[in-house]
Image (cartoon, rainbow, N blue to C red; front, side, top):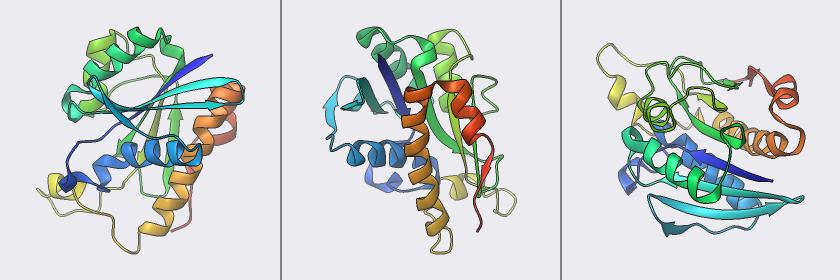
Length: 191
């Protein structure tokens, strides 16, 4: 079985380890745990992971967030991966920092990366793991907040959530989405 694991983010050093790039951070952590190395390829940085008889194609789109769907569609088609075996990981402003939410599909909720994916693959029914980043910013400062770095106070819970996301990716492949959702849905982490 093949799985496409999509970590959403933006390329470039100015975006490294920002709230908006949490998908890249999770993809990096998953690849590192399984001793995989990313290579530059078409529309994405790609790492191949083999684990317990499963093959994971892990991508970090190089298209920037708003065109992520181009990379997802290309790699789904190239690797012949069905939509139910795709897991997209991204930041979620509408969820508090202490929350992770796994869903089988649904609306893009204003997230441009999800909107691009939905437009490219012609469905909103694909699994996604929303990594809550909170919305603790002054009015009119949303962009600065989303593209900002984690605070020292936030870092411990962020790292704990990244580690849990890696477990969720493994569980998604090992036992399937419904059982993984039962085990990991709407997780909260103490701040």
